[in-house]
Amino acid sequence: MIIKIISLGLASALMFSGCATNDGPEYDGRSYQQIKRYDIGTVVQERPVVISDDGSGSFMGALVGAVLGSTLGGGNGRILMALGGGVAGYYAGKEIGKANGDELTVELENGSTIIVVVKGKDIKVGDKIKIIKDGNKVAQVDKIN
Image (cartoon, rainbow, N blue to C red; front, side):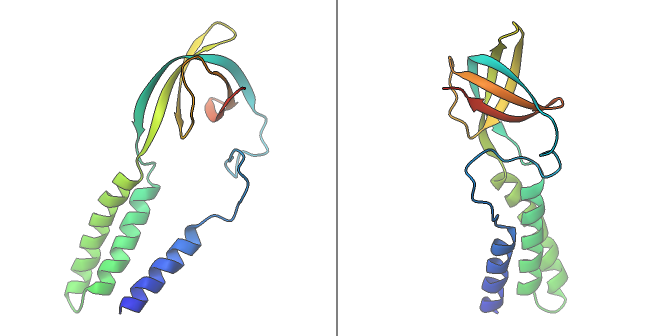
């Protein structure tokens, strides 16, 4: 029984791990051939924020919780364990899916001021940045040296 659970966990981890090794920016598979526009600006204010789960953590948590619950439950309790595991996994995945980010107030070269939220970037007040846009969405934010 334990071997099945471990095997299922390893198989899930391998299935959802990425194969790309490039350290460059990551683009959505649907938008990589689209024309992008960019703005250049200077960060005038920075504020830490929490970015909520986009739904993927909740979904994966519910899925893994339901599978583990149904594996551990026996007889009539199997359905109840699957349901309980799914609910518990949903809430755990939702919390795990949260990330720290920064809300940047940016004064653009054209004189306008915008706010951009970034995750995992070391951008501070005074830094000059390039904001790559995909339509009205931010595709990438990079610090200019």
